[in-house]
Length: 434
Picture 1 (tube, rainbow, N blue to C red):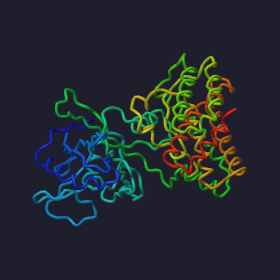
Picture 2 (picture 1 turned 180 degrees about the horizontal axis):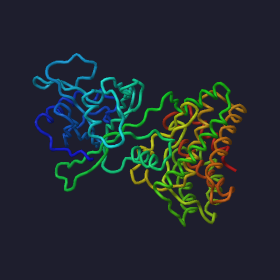
Picture 3 (picture 1 turned 90 degrees about the vertical axis):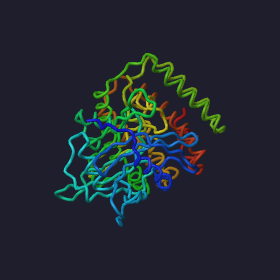
Picture 4 (picture 1 turned 45 degrees about the horizontal axis):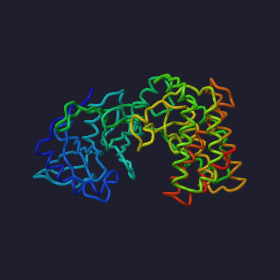
């Protein structure tokens, strides 16, 4: 079921006027340091007192469609939920954590659902781009689901919702199961055709989950080998790739070697222009690119995670889960959903081990030994669970090229944003180059 939005009315216009003073204080609000032009685009009526406003926010280069759920309460309220403002005898509340909004959202959503106690919901604090709400089981009170209210709504596919749904349909249980999701259809002023996009998704709650990167850093700090856990993660990532191939299919690419080689040399030129000292490694990178270009073929391309690293996995009760399938957030949707080599995800995880060792405080031979143990374990687990149709040397060369591509990106990112971390990817370049 897709929710149909209507044209905003006078009350919606009044609420948007209140949002001008309220939105800048929200961490998820994407317009920073500038006054935005706010305009109501459409409204979804979930209940008599519950509305979801779709609001266009424009300022400079920012032009986004925001989702703002509100609950309208007669008179004043002294509750704990944020107050947007008042309009006449109505108090306008932020609806994202309100029981009335949650109950209405679940009643309109698709999916298997869950029997939750909306009155006992808990909003997760500190999020930067969305609002997540933990929902407890009505019978036991234990967390059973987590609802992600998407603050930015976009037309079309949402990989972070569609991909887990498809993986679950394939029978793969390495992703928190989507339990409910809601889509909206709206027509912007002057729009000829309606647009359809997601409002949010409730996924199964993963109890006792630990962030994979934080866990790896802690183990490195303790001098605790990560190889066994990394091997298990490699097996999970291989299972994910098999399920993705089953769900979305694969594509042969006759120009595969040339595509990878060209992408690497293009990345090198970009990195050298941004960080001139990269030029000292340019000859080695070009050598790897030339070796790749000479390959007869590459494995088929398929749907991949697209931004896989240790921060995108959770460990709970001795097993791994993969999360956050939206890909690189700043990349266009078409680029994030384009088939790619599965080994690109593998390269992303391998790069994470370098960072975990460094952030965990390891240096020199200790860092090299810890990282090697983690890399070897991950690659062994992946290879055991993902039989390849290319020989081992070809697979190793492709992986080196993809790691170099990722590392060159990191060199530029760290130089621009975290100069103290620049030695991490630069050391990675030296290790990867022949």
